[in-house]
Amino acid sequence: MSQINLHEIIRQQQEQLTAIQAQIQALLAAQGGVGAGEATTGPNRGSHMEVAKPAIFNGEARRVGGFIIACRLYIKMKLRGNTVEEQVQWVLTYVQGGSTDVWKENIMDELESGEVEYKSVEEFLTCLRKEFRGGEEESVKAAELRKMEQGGKMMEEFIQEFKRAAKGSRYEGRPLVEEFKRGMNSGIRRKLMEAENLPTSIKQWYRRATAFDRNWRESRREEERLRGKKEAGGGGQKQERQSLP
Image 1: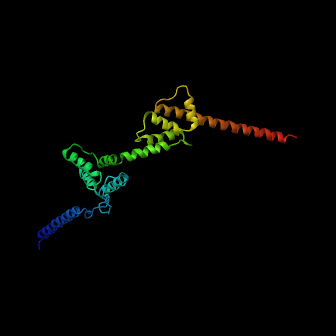
Image 2: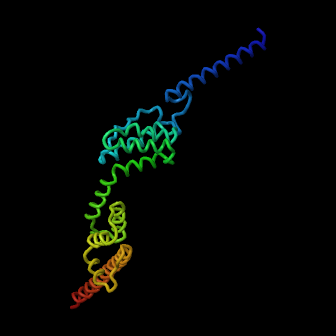
Image 3: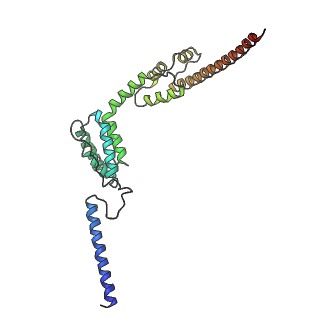
């Protein structure tokens, strides 16, 4: 066999091997598996893992949070390479029954007509949460707001917690101010109520309450410092008197 023929046979075998590898890759891709020789890292690193699919969501407010978490996990592990439209449609297949049917039908009509276009599946999941948990979340926030008290917290910390609870509670204007007044410590509330120019807006209450709280804490630190200094001085005099003959 000549050297030329040998090279030709090797070349043909290499071409056949390449074609077979391509077929294997195509079959594995169609089955959702990891390609031969492909590392299990990168965007598709979870494609070979078993991930539980979400349970059917029928519109119950108490279940919407768990449903969204399950959808996020599955999409992250299995559908990251899909388009946003495909991911949204996949979520909709698990939205069935109860109060969801009409909403689902409207969403599908809007998607098909181009009325609505989601930039990400997260945007769609946020809309789903608002639709089926809005009333419950609002009542939870309002209840949390009504129970808040400053206690030993600094006013800045209390205000940040109060703002988080107020957001989404539908409290605003005078009712919001009243809840803030109720929650702050009585000493600061009394000082503010006795002031000549009573705060009116919630922002004014935040600002004035923070200033009073800081002044009060500074005053306490100064009193403790002076008390400690006085006690130290008094103890020294007492010790000196006791050492006298």
